[in-house]
Amino acid sequence: MDAPYIDVEAARIALEKRGYILIDIIGYGGFANVFKVYSQHFKQYFAAKVCYIGSDAVTQNLQSFMAEVGALSKIYHSSVINIYSYFDDNSYLFIILDYCPNGSVLDYIKTHPHIETSLIFDWLVQTTEGLVACHNIGISHRDIKPSNLLIDSYNRIKIGDFGLAVIAEKSQMIARFGGSPIFYSPEMVMKKKFDPFKADVWALGITFYRLIFGKIPYTAKSNDELVEQIKCGRIIIPATCDAKLSVVLEMILKPNPDERPTAADVLQLLKYIRPQKKAQFLVPFAVRRSSNKFKSQTLESKTFSHKLPTLSRRRNSAFVDDN
Image 1 (spheres, rainbow, N blue to C red):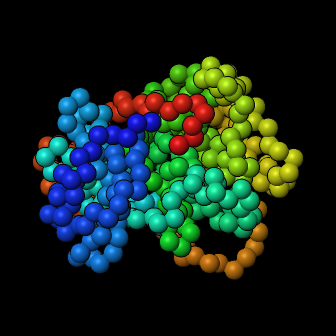
Image 2: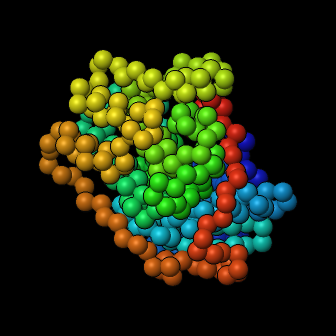
Image 3: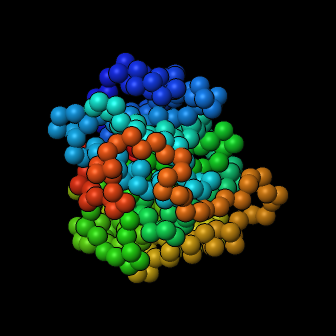
């Protein structure tokens, strides 16, 4: 994936006007670059997601920006990235977010071939808690994968990148396709209308598989082969997997979405089979966020509405890439 066009000097000047010093580039996603910045007011580091809306990029980038702001403005949870501010400057949009210095789960997997069982369970539970918090207020993430699970300074998971998020009613069917094909559910590759919450659960299962076994569950050598393997829906759980965890994975990865558990069901199952240990982290919590709290609403009110727009953006992710 090519990095989106960002004039770093223009971004630096815009950030400095609002009291943020640009330190370094962290990475880039489907529609934005992410920078590490330092707040002169709060005396701490944040992540600044910068989106270019010039030229033909304006529609899809603005929609992704609105989706992310709209979703994150509605939830506060210790396993979901926190939004502090958003603003525009000329041809750029900015979102100020939690800074997670330990990268993503994908980064960690690539550099740690053997992950302790206790840490795996911590991350499975924290990720599911964050997803449950989203689903409880009608938000489907639609892009759950290891590269979107960020690790904070306490090694806790924070779900990030809500650029594809949608607000939906329970059991509502949608036909908006996007994200990384490797994490598509069987009903998505068939290009049928699907329940986005059940599709999130499938993506959660593939993410769990990647975290636990260090690989994806497919052997496809082409996109066509990948589609066929996903349609088949037969995910083989390695015999080395813990028996109870294997049962949970099999339940999550049911090809029929009607047979899949909800994210809340998955959380209860994980807590039931999780090895007992002394709690190390604060218990996550979720509340609805006030529509005016922690925001800098500098964009015109007509640009932002409480209803998220229809999203049409699709990422050009190769099947071999789980970024």
